[in-house]
Length: 226
Ligand SMILES: Cc1cc2nc3c(=O)[nH]c(=O)nc-3n(C[C@H](O)[C@H](O)[C@H](O)COP(=O)(O)O)c2cc1C
Image 1 (spheres, rainbow, N blue to C red):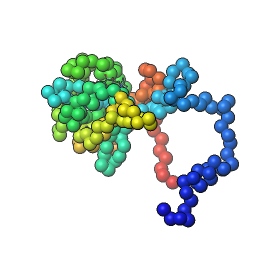
Image 2 (spheres, rainbow, N blue to C red):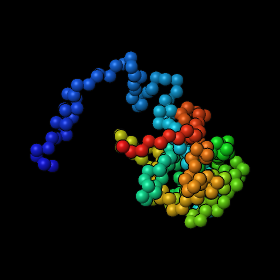
Image 3 (spheres, rainbow, N blue to C red):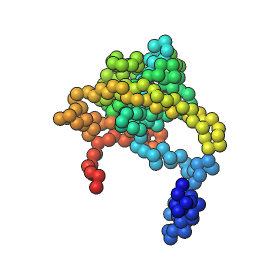
Protein backbone atom coordinates (compact mmCIF):
# COMPACT_ATOMS: atom_id res chain seq x y z
CA UNK A 1 0.00 0.00 0.00
CA UNK A 2 1.21 3.56 -0.82
CA UNK A 3 2.15 5.24 2.52
CA UNK A 4 0.21 8.43 1.60
CA UNK A 5 -3.03 6.46 1.28
CA UNK A 6 -5.27 6.54 4.39
CA UNK A 7 -5.25 3.37 6.47
CA UNK A 8 -8.36 1.31 7.05
CA UNK A 9 -8.60 2.74 10.62
CA UNK A 10 -8.34 6.33 9.34
CA UNK A 11 -11.10 5.68 6.80
CA UNK A 12 -13.31 4.08 9.45
CA UNK A 13 -12.79 7.13 11.68
CA UNK A 14 -13.72 9.34 8.71
CA UNK A 15 -17.06 7.58 8.32
CA UNK A 16 -17.83 7.69 12.07
CA UNK A 17 -17.04 11.40 12.31
CA UNK A 18 -19.21 12.28 9.33
CA UNK A 19 -22.22 14.41 10.39
CA UNK A 20 -25.18 12.09 10.06
CA UNK A 21 -28.42 11.34 11.89
CA UNK A 22 -28.24 8.82 14.72
CA UNK A 23 -30.52 5.84 14.27
CA UNK A 24 -33.89 6.65 15.92
CA UNK A 25 -35.42 3.65 17.68
CA UNK A 26 -38.97 4.86 17.02
CA UNK A 27 -38.26 5.06 13.30
CA UNK A 28 -36.92 1.52 12.89
CA UNK A 29 -37.60 -1.95 14.15
CA UNK A 30 -34.01 -3.18 14.37
CA UNK A 31 -32.72 -6.56 15.44
CA UNK A 32 -29.82 -8.95 15.18
CA UNK A 33 -31.01 -12.19 13.54
CA UNK A 34 -28.91 -14.28 15.92
CA UNK A 35 -30.93 -12.82 18.85
CA UNK A 36 -34.40 -12.75 17.27
CA UNK A 37 -36.77 -10.56 15.25
CA UNK A 38 -39.43 -10.03 18.00
CA UNK A 39 -42.20 -10.19 15.38
CA UNK A 40 -44.88 -12.82 14.78
CA UNK A 41 -43.05 -14.03 11.66
CA UNK A 42 -39.54 -13.71 10.29
CA UNK A 43 -39.63 -10.70 7.91
CA UNK A 44 -36.37 -11.41 6.07
CA UNK A 45 -37.88 -13.42 3.25
CA UNK A 46 -40.40 -10.62 2.67
CA UNK A 47 -37.55 -8.11 2.58
CA UNK A 48 -35.38 -10.00 0.10
CA UNK A 49 -38.33 -10.44 -2.25
CA UNK A 50 -39.68 -11.14 -4.74
CA UNK A 51 -37.30 -14.02 -5.36
CA UNK A 52 -37.29 -15.86 -8.68
CA UNK A 53 -37.99 -19.56 -8.52
CA UNK A 54 -35.65 -22.08 -10.10
CA UNK A 55 -37.68 -25.22 -10.72
CA UNK A 56 -34.74 -27.57 -10.62
CA UNK A 57 -34.90 -30.89 -12.47
CA UNK A 58 -32.25 -33.51 -11.84
CA UNK A 59 -31.68 -37.24 -12.06
CA UNK A 60 -29.69 -39.41 -9.70
CA UNK A 61 -26.93 -41.78 -10.82
CA UNK A 62 -29.52 -44.50 -11.52
CA UNK A 63 -31.73 -42.21 -13.62
CA UNK A 64 -34.46 -41.50 -11.01
CA UNK A 65 -36.16 -38.21 -11.89
CA UNK A 66 -36.45 -35.31 -9.44
CA UNK A 67 -38.07 -31.87 -9.69
CA UNK A 68 -38.20 -29.26 -6.89
CA UNK A 69 -38.65 -25.47 -6.57
CA UNK A 70 -35.88 -23.30 -5.09
CA UNK A 71 -36.41 -19.58 -4.48
CA UNK A 72 -32.91 -19.08 -3.13
CA UNK A 73 -32.13 -18.95 -6.80
CA UNK A 74 -30.65 -16.42 -9.16
CA UNK A 75 -28.44 -15.68 -12.14
CA UNK A 76 -25.04 -14.55 -10.90
CA UNK A 77 -23.08 -13.88 -14.08
CA UNK A 78 -23.86 -13.27 -17.75
CA UNK A 79 -20.49 -14.15 -19.31
CA UNK A 80 -20.22 -17.02 -18.81
CA UNK A 81 -23.90 -17.42 -17.91
CA UNK A 82 -24.04 -18.76 -14.35
CA UNK A 83 -26.96 -19.54 -12.05
CA UNK A 84 -27.04 -20.58 -8.40
CA UNK A 85 -29.48 -22.10 -5.98
CA UNK A 86 -29.21 -22.86 -2.31
CA UNK A 87 -30.56 -25.83 -0.42
CA UNK A 88 -31.37 -25.68 3.29
CA UNK A 89 -30.13 -29.16 4.10
CA UNK A 90 -28.62 -31.60 1.66
CA UNK A 91 -31.83 -32.15 -0.32
CA UNK A 92 -32.33 -34.65 -3.16
CA UNK A 93 -31.57 -32.04 -5.84
CA UNK A 94 -28.13 -31.44 -4.31
CA UNK A 95 -27.44 -35.15 -3.80
CA UNK A 96 -28.39 -35.82 -7.44
CA UNK A 97 -26.17 -33.03 -8.76
CA UNK A 98 -23.30 -34.38 -6.65
CA UNK A 99 -23.79 -37.68 -8.49
CA UNK A 100 -24.31 -36.42 -12.05
CA UNK A 101 -23.03 -32.80 -12.15
CA UNK A 102 -26.10 -31.71 -14.12
CA UNK A 103 -29.37 -29.83 -13.55
CA UNK A 104 -31.98 -27.90 -15.45
CA UNK A 105 -33.72 -24.69 -14.26
CA UNK A 106 -37.30 -24.40 -15.48
CA UNK A 107 -39.21 -21.12 -15.32
CA UNK A 108 -42.43 -21.20 -13.24
CA UNK A 109 -45.51 -19.34 -14.48
CA UNK A 110 -48.87 -18.60 -12.86
CA UNK A 111 -50.35 -21.42 -14.97
CA UNK A 112 -47.78 -23.89 -13.60
CA UNK A 113 -47.98 -22.62 -9.99
CA UNK A 114 -50.02 -25.39 -8.40
CA UNK A 115 -47.98 -28.10 -10.14
CA UNK A 116 -44.81 -26.39 -8.91
CA UNK A 117 -46.27 -26.34 -5.40
CA UNK A 118 -46.91 -30.09 -5.54
CA UNK A 119 -43.26 -30.69 -6.40
CA UNK A 120 -42.25 -28.75 -3.26
CA UNK A 121 -43.29 -31.63 -1.00
CA UNK A 122 -40.52 -33.61 0.70
CA UNK A 123 -40.93 -37.00 -0.98
CA UNK A 124 -38.68 -40.06 -0.86
CA UNK A 125 -35.65 -39.70 -3.10
CA UNK A 126 -36.70 -42.27 -5.71
CA UNK A 127 -40.18 -40.74 -6.22
CA UNK A 128 -40.60 -38.94 -9.54
CA UNK A 129 -42.16 -35.51 -8.74
CA UNK A 130 -42.86 -34.94 -12.44
CA UNK A 131 -45.19 -37.92 -12.35
CA UNK A 132 -46.69 -36.95 -8.96
CA UNK A 133 -47.52 -33.43 -10.22
CA UNK A 134 -48.63 -34.55 -13.70
CA UNK A 135 -45.90 -32.66 -15.48
CA UNK A 136 -45.14 -33.47 -19.08
CA UNK A 137 -41.37 -33.85 -19.48
CA UNK A 138 -39.17 -33.39 -22.52
CA UNK A 139 -35.59 -34.58 -23.02
CA UNK A 140 -32.79 -32.06 -22.63
CA UNK A 141 -30.23 -31.78 -25.39
CA UNK A 142 -26.89 -31.78 -23.54
CA UNK A 143 -27.71 -33.13 -20.09
CA UNK A 144 -29.64 -36.10 -18.69
CA UNK A 145 -32.22 -34.30 -16.47
CA UNK A 146 -35.59 -33.95 -18.19
CA UNK A 147 -37.03 -30.49 -18.55
CA UNK A 148 -40.60 -29.20 -18.13
CA UNK A 149 -42.28 -29.06 -21.55
CA UNK A 150 -44.68 -26.20 -20.64
CA UNK A 151 -42.03 -24.00 -18.99
CA UNK A 152 -41.61 -20.84 -21.12
CA UNK A 153 -37.85 -21.22 -20.69
CA UNK A 154 -35.49 -23.89 -19.43
CA UNK A 155 -31.77 -23.65 -18.77
CA UNK A 156 -29.62 -26.75 -19.09
CA UNK A 157 -26.73 -26.43 -16.62
CA UNK A 158 -23.56 -28.22 -15.63
CA UNK A 159 -22.45 -27.67 -12.02
CA UNK A 160 -19.16 -25.87 -11.52
CA UNK A 161 -19.37 -25.75 -7.70
CA UNK A 162 -21.28 -27.40 -4.88
CA UNK A 163 -20.36 -25.78 -1.58
CA UNK A 164 -21.44 -26.46 1.96
CA UNK A 165 -21.16 -23.04 3.60
CA UNK A 166 -19.27 -22.15 6.78
CA UNK A 167 -20.77 -19.60 9.22
CA UNK A 168 -19.18 -16.64 11.02
CA UNK A 169 -18.20 -18.89 13.91
CA UNK A 170 -16.40 -21.28 11.51
CA UNK A 171 -19.25 -23.77 12.00
CA UNK A 172 -20.39 -25.93 9.11
CA UNK A 173 -23.88 -24.78 8.05
CA UNK A 174 -26.64 -26.99 6.69
CA UNK A 175 -26.66 -24.76 3.59
CA UNK A 176 -25.50 -26.07 0.23
CA UNK A 177 -24.94 -23.69 -2.67
CA UNK A 178 -24.88 -25.08 -6.17
CA UNK A 179 -23.48 -22.97 -9.00
CA UNK A 180 -24.04 -24.05 -12.57
CA UNK A 181 -22.95 -22.85 -15.98
CA UNK A 182 -25.78 -22.65 -18.51
CA UNK A 183 -24.88 -24.81 -21.51
CA UNK A 184 -28.17 -24.68 -23.43
CA UNK A 185 -31.22 -22.40 -23.34
CA UNK A 186 -34.73 -23.31 -24.51
CA UNK A 187 -37.39 -20.63 -25.02
CA UNK A 188 -40.93 -21.46 -26.08
CA UNK A 189 -41.40 -19.60 -29.36
CA UNK A 190 -44.86 -18.28 -28.37
CA UNK A 191 -43.07 -16.12 -25.78
CA UNK A 192 -40.63 -14.63 -28.29
CA UNK A 193 -42.05 -11.37 -29.56
CA UNK A 194 -39.91 -9.96 -32.42
CA UNK A 195 -36.88 -11.61 -30.86
CA UNK A 196 -37.62 -10.32 -27.34
CA UNK A 197 -38.50 -12.70 -24.49
CA UNK A 198 -41.92 -11.30 -23.63
CA UNK A 199 -41.75 -11.27 -19.82
CA UNK A 200 -45.08 -9.42 -19.51
CA UNK A 201 -46.83 -12.24 -21.39
CA UNK A 202 -45.09 -15.08 -19.55
CA UNK A 203 -46.67 -14.53 -16.10
CA UNK A 204 -43.51 -15.58 -14.26
CA UNK A 205 -44.18 -16.05 -10.55
CA UNK A 206 -41.77 -15.27 -7.71
CA UNK A 207 -41.76 -15.89 -4.00
CA UNK A 208 -42.98 -12.83 -2.11
CA UNK A 209 -42.24 -13.19 1.54
CA UNK A 210 -44.41 -14.97 4.02
CA UNK A 211 -45.54 -18.57 3.70
CA UNK A 212 -47.75 -19.00 0.66
CA UNK A 213 -47.17 -15.52 -0.81
CA UNK A 214 -46.24 -15.16 -4.47
CA UNK A 215 -46.22 -12.34 -7.01
CA UNK A 216 -46.74 -12.41 -10.75
CA UNK A 217 -44.29 -10.31 -12.79
CA UNK A 218 -46.56 -8.28 -15.08
CA UNK A 219 -45.66 -4.61 -14.84
CA UNK A 220 -42.45 -3.62 -16.57
CA UNK A 221 -41.00 -0.13 -16.72
CA UNK A 222 -37.98 1.07 -18.60
CA UNK A 223 -35.13 3.14 -17.16
CA UNK A 224 -31.97 3.35 -19.21
CA UNK A 225 -28.55 3.93 -17.59
CA UNK A 226 -27.73 7.66 -17.28
C1 LIG B 1 -41.75 -21.81 -4.00
C2 LIG B 1 -40.82 -22.68 -3.19
C3 LIG B 1 -39.51 -22.29 -3.05
C4 LIG B 1 -38.61 -23.06 -2.31
N1 LIG B 1 -37.31 -22.66 -2.19
C5 LIG B 1 -36.43 -23.42 -1.51
C6 LIG B 1 -35.06 -23.02 -1.43
O1 LIG B 1 -34.63 -22.03 -1.98
N2 LIG B 1 -34.22 -23.83 -0.72
C7 LIG B 1 -34.64 -24.98 -0.12
O2 LIG B 1 -33.83 -25.67 0.50
N3 LIG B 1 -35.92 -25.38 -0.20
C8 LIG B 1 -36.83 -24.64 -0.89
N4 LIG B 1 -38.12 -25.04 -0.99
C9 LIG B 1 -38.52 -26.34 -0.43
C10 LIG B 1 -38.11 -27.45 -1.40
O3 LIG B 1 -38.68 -27.27 -2.68
C11 LIG B 1 -38.59 -28.80 -0.84
O4 LIG B 1 -37.88 -29.06 0.36
C12 LIG B 1 -38.40 -29.91 -1.83
O5 LIG B 1 -39.07 -31.06 -1.35
C13 LIG B 1 -36.95 -30.28 -2.06
O6 LIG B 1 -36.94 -31.30 -3.01
P1 LIG B 1 -35.70 -32.23 -3.28
O7 LIG B 1 -35.34 -32.90 -1.97
O8 LIG B 1 -36.27 -33.19 -4.29
O9 LIG B 1 -34.59 -31.40 -3.85
C14 LIG B 1 -39.06 -24.27 -1.70
C15 LIG B 1 -40.40 -24.66 -1.83
C16 LIG B 1 -41.28 -23.87 -2.57
C17 LIG B 1 -42.71 -24.29 -2.72
